[in-house]
Image (cartoon, rainbow, N blue to C red; front, side, top):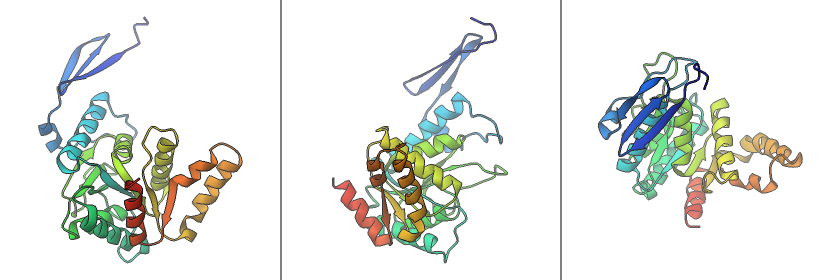
Amino acid sequence: MNKKQHYIIICLIAGTMVLSGCNQTGKTIHLDPSRCEQPGRRVSDGEIPTPEDLALDGYCAGEVIKRSAPGGVITIFGSARAKEGMTSYDHTRAFASLWTKKMGKKYPILTGGGPGIMEAGNRGALEAGGKSLYYATYFGSGAEKANRYTTDGYMFASFSQREADMVDRAVAIVIAPGGVGTEWEIFETVSKIQTHKKKAVPVVLLGSKKTWQPLFDRIAYLAKIKTISPKDMDILQVAESPEDAVAIIENGLQK
């Protein structure tokens, strides 16, 4: 083996992560619920999170689910730039409130914990008297905190691990209009369901059909050039009102 090569083996046994490598004696990290009382490490811009960061993020994400949403969550994605008074914000807030009153005890609302659509989702859930969960991460200064409408959650070191857990732990996903990050979340969700890495769940686009038509045009084009299957287009459903979104998810969960 080239002396410059380093191999790291990660073992998670009974809540303890052991790191060992060719050029190190090993490092042991004890993972227990108390580790999740503090946020994940602030990773500098451009820095790749370490195996320790990823292990702690995944573990703490599971702890949030274990104590607050053992049946799974309704994940909400959308623009961080949305404001109260915008249709996307108001519809998301109304959806989260309606859902929480109806099914929130079994399937709480989960967002990315930030402003905009995330705030709207947490706000609606909290105003309805239910749990309001978050998986947040750092941007900019690193002094970020979850919005004031949350009741439980965790601050991730890894942006990508946070996105993965938000998709993987959802029994349904609601998406309001957003930007590049939201598009990523849409296609990560579709890709995981398409490849059967995630069990099919209701994936609801909240907003008018006109708003979402460009996305469907793009997906139709991919089907036309045969880079996806035509049936993949059926993964996404449009809900033009908060009530429609609730109904779509209820119907999907009964299947």
